[in-house]
Length: 239
Image 1 (tube, helix red, strand yellow):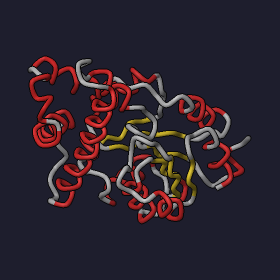
Image 2 (cartoon, rainbow, N blue to C red):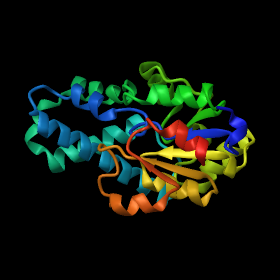
Image 3 (cartoon, rainbow, N blue to C red):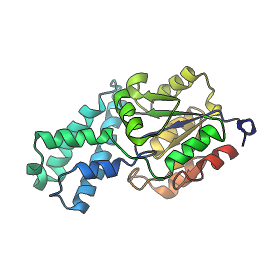
Image 4 (cartoon, rainbow, N blue to C red):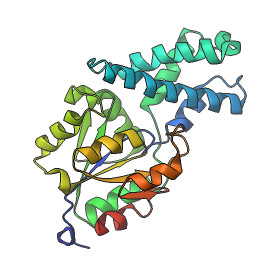
């Protein structure tokens, strides 16, 4: 299938959650003394509060913070407030290990093939466009085995998503127009901003993310709603 059959020239991907199963890595890093259901709940709440913290920083117009620092601070709050019974399970080394776990995540099973098809079958450029640090993204690319043309972090761009300038700056750097790019994410806030920036939008449902969103409403908001990336290449070819 030739890329000449579509106006799309590139795909921007959110990374954690969308392409990578952060939950598996984080839960595995937690002390085995914590019951599996509780460990899962702790990880989900940690991720949820991380997004709320980022949103606060974005609304206060603060510069992007090293994600390791944000995650460590948020974890202390989640542990103390929501899981006080497990405070004694986390010494300094354990806390260091669980932060490091965010740097080594497996891809969701279908992602590698979907990205390969976008590049090889459709001839599209693929980019990471995600909050976090460049070091984090380099580590995640290595641990996941995924290949991209370029990695755009909030640290590199100097802006948090969903700041519209974050999308505009990335588009300027790759010399593409918004309508030539599809934003793929498992986060509605991300796609809402990408849509405002003029990009096409594909929502990927992941059970680990957007747990506060009404999925029936999300299904109506964007160009496409998918449960996984198996149909992503064909979907993008048809946009």
